[in-house]
Amino acid sequence: MPGTRPADIKRNLKPLLALRPDLAVADRALVIRPVRHVLRGAFFDRTGDGYSFSVSRMLVPLYDAHFDIFLRDRVRGAGRDVWEQHFQMLLLDQLAEHVFAPAGQVTTLSAVAERLAGTFRSQGGGNALFKAPVRAFILAGAPERAEAYLDDLARDNAVRPLMLRAIQELRSELDRDIAELCAEAHAREAEMVAALKLQSVWEPSPFPVEEPKASHARRCDEAPFSIRPWVPTPEGLFADEPVETNTPSFSHGQLVRAGRNMLLLPLTREEAERRHHARKDYQLTVRPMEKGRLTVHYLGKRPKSPHDPKDPDFLPSLSIWLSLDVPGWHVQATLRGDLDRQGWLGDLNVEISPQRSSPEAWCAALRSRSGVLEITDRREGEPARRTEIPMTEAEMAPYLGATFAFSDYWALLHHVDAFTRMAGYGPLPGLPEGPA
Image (cartoon, rainbow, N blue to C red; front, side, top):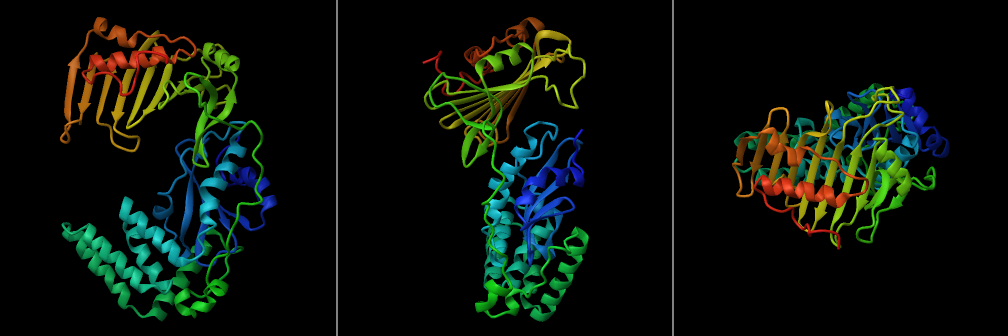
């Protein structure tokens, strides 16, 4: 069974390494070579699952390659389920688009500093990420940008005295002797090369602040990197989502590729129906209305999964994950089956937010075992109003006693709609009475 050890990672990357001598594996990382001052590439980190790893973009100064900097920048969904037949091809495709295409365009230390500064200002982070842009700007020969970054942080944190004190202390870096600072960074680079096992790809080089500007590209900067050529993506791995309303498509999953929602390993209607009746994992995607998008993931058996029971007659309980996007609103619902009662849901949970990236404005969960309806309402702002309502089995039955026919997504939507009405939210945003 494939795993997530460095040897497994290298095996999955083998066709790419054969094609691209300017890429190299160093322990759990794949980096663009040669490396001067910037680590550009992907890091394959362990997870709690022995059959999945997380993939993080590495775009950090070599002398400052703290894990708490680059491990924050994960590629969503990459590295999951190494046992899947399509795993290798999907991983290579995602590395091209989400890691190496953008990283290959970053060749200067000052550009890395700008990205680090933007990340800390927009997302926050630990002490290493807070300090990293200042040193990078100085070593790039742009101390004025380090000062501007600290000024921006001071404005952002005007009412936080502890942060203002840390910013003021960090300003002392601007007064340090440049030769001393460079010597320290060069020594740190050598330490990181040894720690990350990068000896074969490192090209020791002067920092831009140590060289005339005219020689930066030749002596200090990283080499440009293009994702052409790349391992070709096999035909049939992806397909476009449906564009016509009420014309569902079926697949093993979905992902974003080249900025577009795509189907992963599309299925015919007949294949999906067989999976539905056998309680195997699959996904339905449809436009139930002209400006809406619905995905329904039927969570079921995955025959090759090391996590699933090996009994071929095992029939998992019904579990469904639903995501509905309509103009201005995002709805997410989870219908989790009860292992002890076929045709009965253990939990029904619905979250409604004004847009996909916003915290939920309203959510409700019906728990069959505890017989409680839990409601959290933020529609009038914080603090949220939280309510718990005891429910009898008879009161829960219309919402937890549920079976859904293959491809009947309207029945599923109206089931969720009935629940949100009962729980006090009202009708689902943008939902018409039935198919157009």
